[in-house]
Length: 129
Image (tube, rainbow, N blue to C red; front, side, top):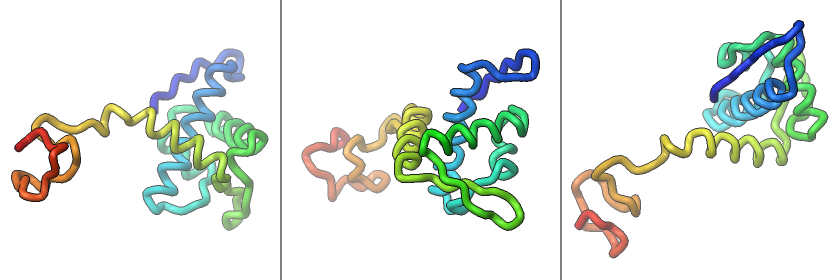
């Protein structure tokens, strides 16, 4: 997730807001998938971004208006939970962002059937035996 935030006269441009929304949505998806909780707050998201708290709040509000997040109480703060639409979109953005990191390494079984050097359970799809 790369955040570019050229703030002009105190307000972010349309592209910056789009990037912020996508980054916030990916972080909410990631946090949920890693078991850090289903509810995100602006404060829980901020350490992962370089933008202002106001930009994060604006992104959260825009994601609510788009139906990607729904507001919920989180202690004394407002939290946000992914909707089904948000999970789908957040997952797609996250997968796209990290697709290159998910490729097989040199010498790894492309079929995913091997455990180390043991190819005894490999099928015909394994190019390593």
